[in-house]
Image (tube, rainbow, N blue to C red; front, top):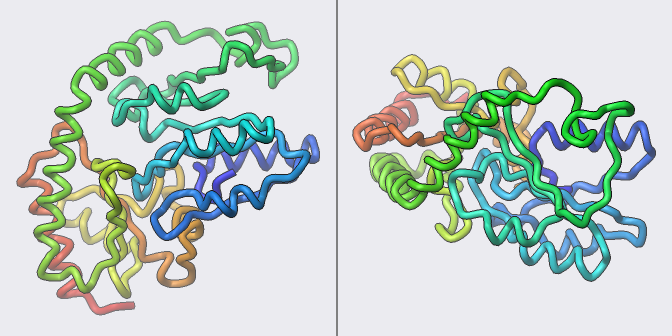
Length: 288
């Protein structure tokens, strides 16, 4: 599995490890924020059964080369799962869907209802129910099916993909506007900005040299901007994000990380104002 996988993936593989005795290997990123394919190959053993690689990182927005990873899996007869929660509704997933055995996504990430999502399983794949005695959705999960939630998520998905190009052009405009405002203070930042072909324009991760991300987040909040210090599911945690660990950033530097996410209704002026605020924080703050 990727070292920077979402906490939900880490939790389930750790449970499987404890309950079933499976051994888990975590593969880091290369310097471009993508899975190091050579390390992935070297981590494969004769008894490897599954590789799980998140399609898009929720903290720096990098996209993983799923078709290339699929080729590695295919030669070894290994199943491939991809967490597409951060990319569904933000980029075309046809190529990803063709190259995985399973993928998952969540409605709240593309303006659908919270608490509803979906899993795609390759039709020819045999699987057993995770919990015994479960009959709903062919044994996949317990509980009554949330029909209104599913309907709402479906409509949200349709709107997201109907407007995909428009939204992504808008996100790139916002990203460029913010980065332009940071130019006078760019020496104070480490910005995880990679090739557009494999990075979501809606997600921008960075560090402010010498200041913890928590401090930057609180200062931005004081000025009316909501940013985060990583994935929302890790809010309140003071440990270094798994993305920073995967990039080899540790110690105080790892705690400097914070993330900016753009929405469909974020305006260019709001992006510029946030950029100016960040530059001001960098100029006035005394490094910790």
